[in-house]
Image 1: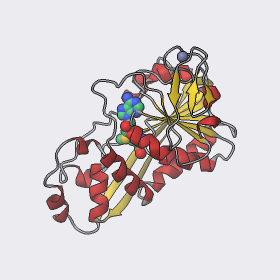
Image 2 (image 1 turned 135 degrees about the horizontal axis):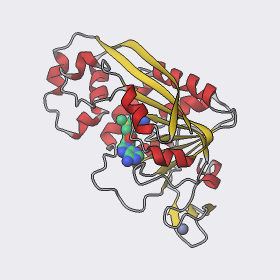
Image 3 (image 1 turned 135 degrees about the vertical axis):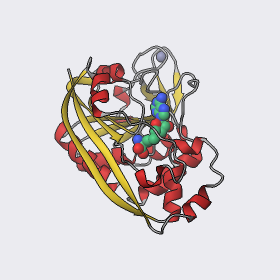
Length: 277
Ligand SMILES: C[S@@+](CC[C@H](N)C(=O)[O-])C[C@H]1O[C@@H](n2cnc3c(N)ncnc32)[C@H](O)[C@@H]1O
Ligand SMILES: [Zn+2]
């Protein structure tokens, strides 16, 4: 619910504090942002150019795939690391939270914690807002900066989503942690070429460290690797929930039909924890 985190938010126009006023969040200068029926608040002041918010079809595919528990191992490790990195009453921000699946799992592991799910996609936010009473969900742009007050969070999570290190440093309390999940080289290796998936070059852990080093020091790192066995409908969801969906995939069904059923697919992710300097 947005009420649980409203004291941490600030007006995206003038940076004043926001408060719940009827069905909106308002600042003392009169800027007002409606609370959507589903409970999230759109705090974007303009739609960013060239940004890749997930579409409704992508979010539906992501929701089906994640609800099927196929990335449960990843959710469990994120929850384990978050529980060690954050205090019991932590404020946790997930930037690019999508459907809120991972933040929901993390909050289940830390019953005293609260979360802010931020995503550029209003469709994603609609789902994330339903995940837990302890999550407040906002439509916001990680690149432009999140309308959240300085040092508000104990932990920021970013799972396969854009990063803005300087902004994350501003949002974290001193000694706060940043938890990042990035795909490893062999992630989904069996299907990437065969299903024409767009290769998001993960970048080596050393490059990640380099990009963060002005603000963050490495704290902990682990690799998660497991084999998934996926049927054809689930494979289609896995392709269509990612950036490949932004492009036409006319022959996807045909390509999937040429794979064994079920198909063994490697889930391979690097989980990195950084400490704010
Ligand atoms: C690959 S998805 C990952 C979603 C979620 N973390 C998960 O793993 O299920 C990337 C997410 O980042 C969001 N996104 C893309 N650009 C963004 C931006 N500039 N600011 C905030 N979110 C953004 C997309 O809408 C999408 O939900
Ligand atoms: Zn304002």
